[in-house]
Image 1: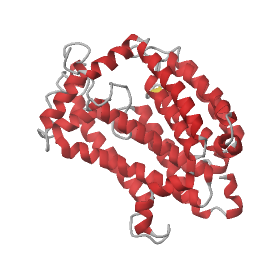
Image 2: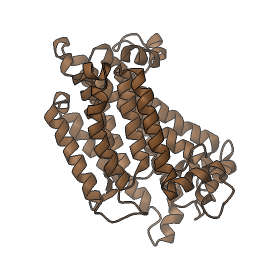
Image 3: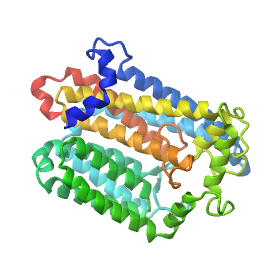
Image 4: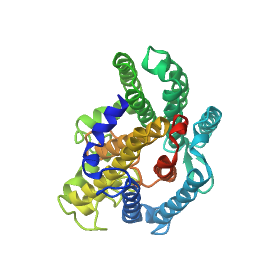
Length: 398
């Protein structure tokens, strides 16, 4: 199932590319590096533009958030060196490593609950140089753990309920910790990624129907019985019925897109960033991009995200062809994370989904997301580099 699924995804690439060494299209590595590089540059430009009024109103220097974003990128690149040069992929998939990473992540999630609340949530650990959101680390750790689990326990995953029940113990614990913060958005992304990896690993359809129903009911209950989530869901249905209160942020975002039209009002000329759209440099940076650069700017951002996701899928498919299943599922899981966060962030900016605190990968302001996203890219590049060099007899360990 996994082979046929990823084969369909990459069919357009394979029809023109031939083998990994002889291809007409740019390599997945080149496309990934170029797309991420362009995204980082655009992020700095738009964060600088969107954050200046916000910074000045709080007595900061004009380029405070630009400098912070540049610092986060630098830190992310430094930390990306660790998995690329210092951590062997084989070690990453050892059971001991898996549970050490899960243990550390769990302890950090617990520690975050005792931290200082920010906007009513306890999601961050103050590390001095940045407030680290542990949920971002949890996404990466869960991908690695599940990618190894569905290979190591492949019979249980494809036959019966044992696979889902075993993984539910881990995901259930993370669910409790994330809901206590609360961080419903990250939880949705993690659960969705686990489901996606199980799907391509060959889990029976009836399990997805049953578990999807259960998860759907629990999600509805999580929204219906928590007032702020219910308010967001209802305001999403009509973003202009209470423009001065519950609909304020979404309505201003839609106004920004409306002003931008096709080519935008011009870089730096946004009106909504002048204290109309709260903290426009974070989750709603795409709205300011739409206002200043118009449809052209937004389409460019989404195109670059698509190229990044496509590169991850190509890396996953190439590893799958060599039967390096763990690496294939890891790259696929990273692609799913990027897809989920891109779609959710873009949709909430455009009023197609309720507002949610999820960043656009490589674009929105934020140290945790930038750090983990760059580490994910390093893992993708390592898989791309080492996959052709692994002997066939060793592929079952990867």
